[in-house]
Image (cartoon, rainbow, N blue to C red; front, side, top):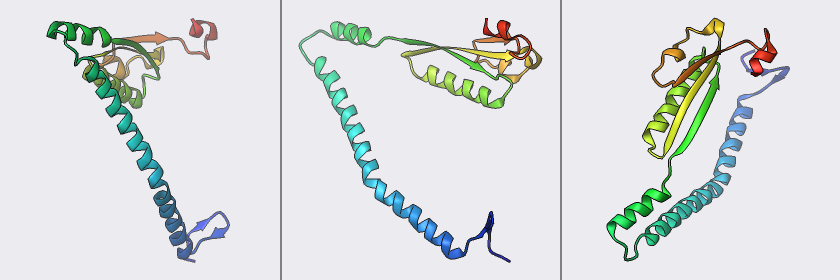
Length: 148
């Protein structure tokens, strides 16, 4: 019996070919919708960029334009709190967030990682991307202390 089985049903190679053709035809039928959405987003971004340039194209001095640009661009400050510091995926997320924060001058991030006392020696604690590593009590041991 060389045919792959799914539960109690046996699927022939023809079934898999038809299923693949159905997937491809579904993707091809949705392609115009995807392209329309992408074009609409590009047009929207283009129009917003033109509006910003138009606001600065009047007869103002260079210093006034710089002041206007600096006043409209404000630094957004975020505090990101992550739990599960013992996991490598938390470390990866911390590194990704730090890279995003460092590459965007209008974003300022403070990254705080929380972990239980028994996992206090995880790699995330010693990462230079973490601003603060805090130890918390387990909610199983003391739910009230965990909430505080």
